[in-house]
Length: 53
Image (cartoon, rainbow, N blue to C red; front, side):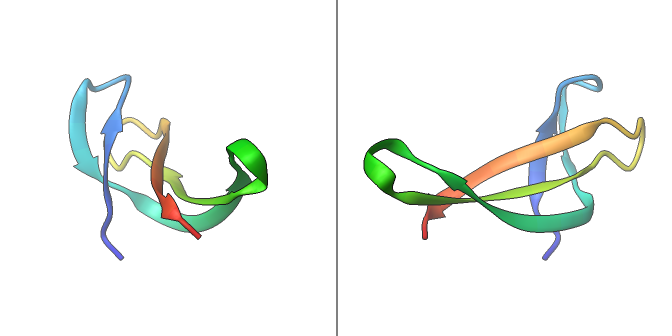
């Protein structure tokens, strides 16, 4: 996928490594899509919310 997300530790947008799409609960019972991964530089967990499922 090569999704970009903001790394809180590096304070920059980076390409995620080992990314995986997850589903989370939204307001009103709506399912929301999100991607989780790891920063390739510092190893911090990264998270990006996508559109509705």
